[in-house]
Length: 337
View 1 (tube, rainbow, N blue to C red):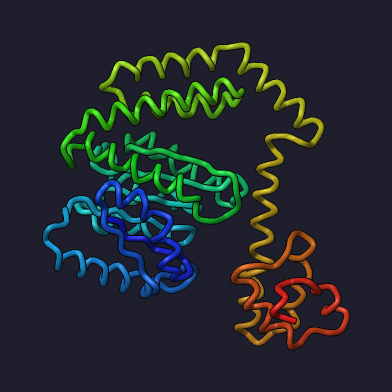
View 2: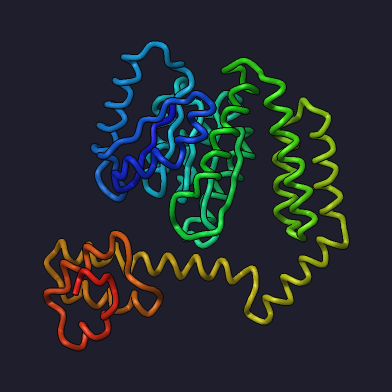
């Protein structure tokens, strides 16, 4: 069963992202209207306790195969719950958020444990992109099964196909960790698909992605001969002039200021934006400083349009806007005007 923890309590949004693949795999999904990010832990604790109570009332469910999925702040909460519920949580899908290293954290709590698995994901423009990859690297060091899949986009839940990939991979890890019976036909079909995808990425010139996928295949399918082929292909790519030219082109573009580094710069700018368009205005509104909240929004719109949760905050602050501020904020969240 999968517990989905959305950071804004959007229970149906989280559930719908996973439901098609969950139905095919025979998973049960529970998603709460009460989970939250950036606040006290009690709402998330209460939500997980309520879902656990429901699960315990249904003894046909496998108590050793509980999975948690979270996004942003609830990704971090899910990782924390996994440690607290060790022995019952078989894996976490952590999107757009990760924990820093600490003794007793997931990397050390599950070190060498093949029955636990971490699927990390982040958008290419997500300001938390690097921290998701960094956590995966720490799981690599402590020999915890992991997989990371990026998607084109900002700080958000992944599209349904990536959510489906996460469930498929966790199903594979359950077989490899002997939490469920091995389905050799299903595994071979998935392996063939992953090998074909790695070859496709190489053919498209996306060599860095091809290397990452080949490495993942070598880790996850070590029992199958294709794993040696994937490892060999990754090693050959690393030695190849093709990848050397790719690295040289990346450096050349960096000198022009339009490069792979640009993606990192966009993520940093996204981090600045989310502070200006949400966190700082929220803090100023809570203290009654509407003028300061408005100044944050004025800075934010020089980066991008106000949207999502920021719109409600802008509506609250807009009552104190001067004529000049109203002009600068025109077109943001039409309902706030």
